Amino acid sequence: MHSVGSISSDLTKPYLKVEGGRCLSGSLKVSGAKNSALVLMAASLLTKETIELNNVPELTDIDVMTELLLSTSAEVQRTKNQLIVNTRSLDSETLKLPYKLVHALRASFVCLGPILARIGEVQIPLPGGCRIGSRPVDEHIKGLQALGANVTIEGENVIAKTKSPNKKLVGAKINLDYESVGATETILMAATLADGCTIIKNAAKEPEIQDLANFLNKMGAKIQGAGSSTITIEGVNSLKGCKHQVIPDRIEAGTFLIAAAITRSPLTISPIIPEHLSSVLSKLKECGCVFEQSNDELKIIPSKVIQAVDITTNPFPGFPTDLQAPFMALMSTAEGICKIKETVFEKRMQHVGEFKRMGSKINLCSNTAIVKGVKKLHATSLTGGDLRSSAAMVLVSLVAKGTSIVQGLEHLDRGYEDFEKKLNNIGANILRVNNSDGKKFSFYKKKSEAKHNFSSGSEVA
Ligand code: EPZ
Image 1 (cartoon, helix red, strand yellow):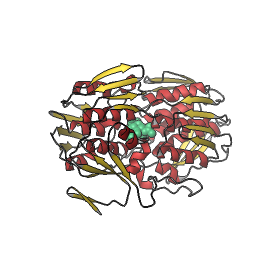
Image 2 (cartoon, protein in one colour; image 1 turned 45 degrees about the vertical axis):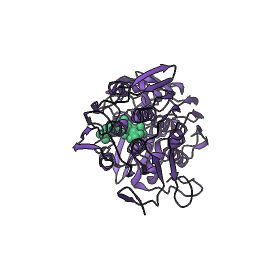
Image 3 (cartoon, helix red, strand yellow; image 1 turned 180 degrees about the vertical axis):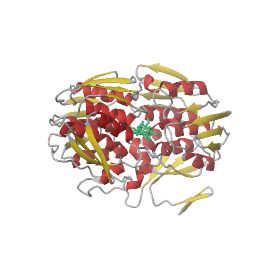
Image 4 (tube, helix red, strand yellow; image 1 turned 135 degrees about the vertical axis):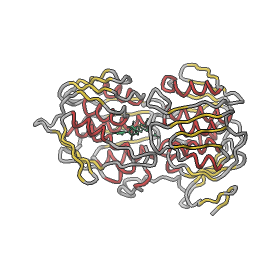
């Protein structure tokens, strides 16, 4: 046990030691979007031909999705940021996806739609709830039922079968009750190989949906309207292989913009697609940040005094829930009082308690936090409970007086490629202290080492 400030912590797990108070300067490179790459990997199950994905971030979530593809007999070649996938040997017998992998990575549930569309039958474990909320999958299931699938839940498994003799799904009009990202992706992928036309109303409009539709269209799908609330899909008989470059990660980019703002340091961040971050940029402008854009580079020049501004999280193009915790870190250092309201997930305020231990003044009532900025935060030992709150803990530690310890790296490593390395390159002083075997922490084990040896309690994405 080790003591930092007044809090003692169990340091048998890997952690980061973050020195507070350093100014940052220079440029940061944004990796490919995790939430796009994961779903594009699932979409590779729609074709017998080879898919080449570039700009794939090196993350533990990508490791798990790779394992899941391997479990379906796919061939996967992986170098640092490239994946070549061929799923020609997908079995036409009932395909059962392994419980531990689906539980280790909630996003793996989006394999349901492509496998069902391709071979007409699949069994996949229910992904269950997670640390940020209960996260039901009813919209995915209703969508597939509307496309003519027989979907039942038996114990912990979802069993889906097409009803028609040719094993194909059938196009339909689907009105989502909630503009769910995952459900839109499931239906979009499934409908590409259905007989006839599908119209999704109240579809999610996130950039990752647009990236998926662009990818599927390259494979030969006929999709129109992705990025708007109505998507039309004309089913085709088969899809072909293609090459695709994953879009830049807007959430990683937003996290870096907030790192600049919280440390009051001008930084240049690229590649950025500004339209993917419009709500975040407008809130940062309200706080007092100035932007200079040139091609895909964005320079942020924060004011020395950051003003408090209210945010409410919402589906795209609203303020992203994934940047709520990092933004709250920034607001802890702002001038004035603001209101931060989480509307997408019911349990995404667990960072509040950690921030308060650093000296943040926050009152939490249900999913609304009232944050009063303070002049000084002090270093302590913090634990991130999910991916984005772990990143927020690092951001707040960058400005706290003293050296903080941040745990919860099993979450951070799921979604940020080389996080501390990128920040160290621009002047931060963050040291990763590894666990006893001296390796970077990861709950992923190579297929040869262990078959699906995952801790089921830690999934988030
Ligand atoms: C995606 O999750 C992202 N994950 C999340 O990223 C992101 O926070 C979220 O979209 C919102 O932007 C991936 O893309 C892998 P939803 P997803 O379906 O698809 C409810 C990160 O940190 N809902 O739009 O699960 C659900 O419970 C993460 O990278 C239903 O009620 O999001 C939630 O309250 C975490 N029924 C809300 O909708 C359903 O069938 C939004 O979920 C589906 C969802």
